[in-house]
Image 1 (cartoon, rainbow, N blue to C red):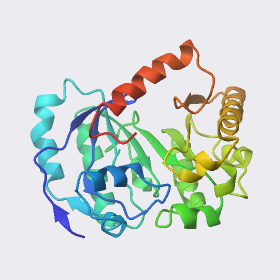
Image 2 (cartoon, helix red, strand yellow):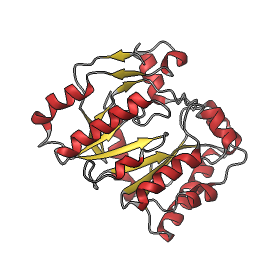
Image 3 (tube, one colour):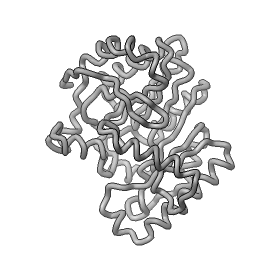
Length: 280
């Protein structure tokens, strides 16, 4: 794997569940075709050339060195560090990135800093070792379908859905906090054999579910019932979560309905959009 060096590692994110973030790789071999917002931003900024460049990740070789340098100055300000917004910390079959992610989490936990993690890969069982990693960490996977056809089309290099779920369930059974990102959730024309109820049922063991619509695909604008579809899906998720005592968060813009409860979320998303380094 190619290596790059950076001058800084930790940055302020402005996101509700992670005031700081780490992105210790450039690119992602999962090759998502929704399209990927992170890839679009990196291409726009001239960091990568194209999709083929993006799916050949480069590891930040001095990431641990930077973390050791930056933590003494920032650790009293940091509540939570998120891995990652513009890459994947447990990128499927990318051992170098996975090993580095484990070292970074261990280092952060050593200073009693909580980590939130999101992946389309498979979590190593060793994360349940509480002698190295904090029980306060929160581990999430992105799941928007259970269809192999859909995964092969839109998330070609990512881990199989059932393998993701199984690895997350293992951490849950070890007493760790787990969550699901159901974003971007596909419209029917992109996943003909889709069942929201089946997806939710497969992950009903988790502590929290975040649900959001698909934004960056032309087929969404062609779908005439777009707003009604996502409104109904959001209501279904809310009812499911309340019935099963699961925390939930509906991303702003997913529902037509606007009330005081979503106003806080809207302001949060504005802060995110104003942060140049954050993947929305």
